[in-house]
Structures are given as structure tokens and as C-alpha cells.
Amino acid sequence: MKTTFARLTLLPMLLGAAQFAAAQTPAAQTSPVRVTASNQLVTQVTVDGKVTERLTEAGSARPGNVLQLNQKVDNVSTGLIRGLALNMNVDPATTFQTAQCNVTGVTTLFSADGKTFAQAPLKKTVTVTENGQSVKKEVVVPPSEYKALRWQLPDLAGGKSANCFIRVSVR
Image (tube, rainbow, N blue to C red; front, side, top):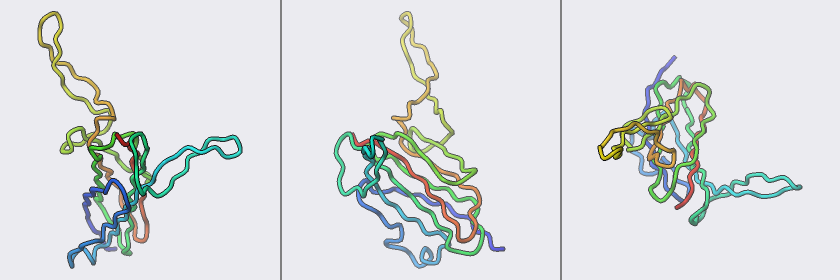
């Protein structure tokens, strides 16, 4: 059985679907991994008196809109891929809401600085004034301050795929 180790860093475009395959190097063209990015507008619609979500292609977005930024990873080989990490930055024009991945055993890590990653809840040290003195306190970083996230995927068998996404609101 062939085993491949891979690490992907993706910076999806805010609007419009991006194909990771654009501008590939010769080595990337033979990669056992294919990554497809897409962005969808999330809207609430009422059907038969029930409110449901509708996902449509995000051709444009306005402040207050919720976008779903998708990354699909396909193992196009017959071998097993180990150590796959999928990174996604939160665009500065948006605010992080939630993340999801359809793979059992995935580890989701978050970053408030875009460099260091940890499981939620993230914590930071702040300096506050109490009784006239500066005191350092550890506080929880709200998800709205997350700048990036990383999905550490378990082994991905040949021919299998993973679908991961984040939802953000446009500022």
C-alpha cells in the first residue's frame, strides 16, 4: 500500500469559486490530492411554513451576509494519504462564525493570530486595571476574533474525499 504525506495551505478567495489547480507546477500536477474551493451565500427561506437554509453561488456579498467557504479534498490516488492538514484564513472583511468538516476523527484547530493553532476555546492574556494596579488576566478569545483555522484530517483512503467549510459574516 502506498502512503503519502501532504500538507495544504489554502487561502480561499472571498467571492467566486477558486480552483486550487490554477498555476500548478509540474510536481503539483501529479499530486494525489485535488482541492476544490467554492463560496456560497447562506440565506433563510420559508418553505411550507418552515424556515430552512438555502445555499446559492456567492457572486457578490454585502455587509451582514453570511458566506459558506467550502474546501473539498479528494484523494485521487489509490493509496492512503496521512498527515493531511487543511488551513483556511478568515478574510479580514469577514467575521468567523463556525467551522465544520464531514470526516470522522478530524481535529479542528483555531488561531487568533494566524500563526499559532490550538483547540477551542482559545485563551489570551490581557492587562486590566484593578484598584489602580495593572493585573494580567487570562480570558477566552471570542470566535469572532479567530483569524485562521486548521483541520488535521485522519488518514484519507484512496478515492475518498473530505468536505470542510467555515461560515463567516461579511462586515
